[in-house]
Length: 241
Image (tube, rainbow, N blue to C red; front, side):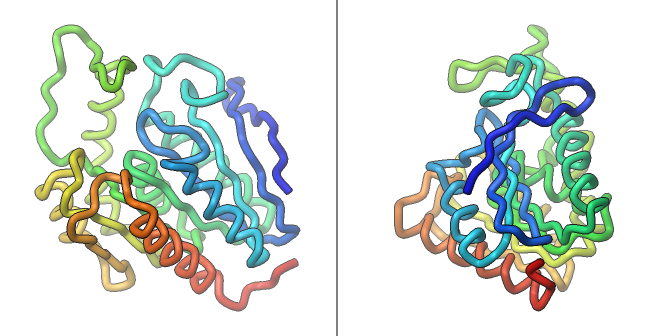
């Protein structure tokens, strides 16, 4: 059963979809740049349903300025993405939940950053994270445009300044990190930065020939199945009540 509602974080409405399995285990899904709470090709919805069948709850949400949440996309902030995800995660932790995080693209970078800050995270799954290790040149226009949408350049400056690859080296939770050799957004240098900072309890899987989440059905099924199984195994024998 999915409950659609609005959570207010810093007086701004954040649209959420809560798959309540009646358990004290929950996965928070963090979408990518220009994405929404359904995930690429509705993969977040598929994952949430599989997790619910295994007795694990989920929370999918739209970041401020994305999907059905308040605000306009141009005002998106990567620092705000981190703060919003951290706030939702801390709320569940404070209520006694075991929490795992799953993110895609810049959402994957977000869950790495949040997971590194909060020591009690059960697991992190990061699909095609972009740590933005290259130097950033702030455009004269003050914004960047992609896919017909504009965002303040500060979003990407914040993403560079967050040093996500370095934060990965501080992530104590078990992690599954998905990288793709034909990723049109995350280049080899950024993928290498992730691999270089991964710890022994982090599993980095590189899929040859896969793109940046624009996967075939078979490719998506492999990533989805491995990710769901990883989360279930990471939660282990924790209580279902």
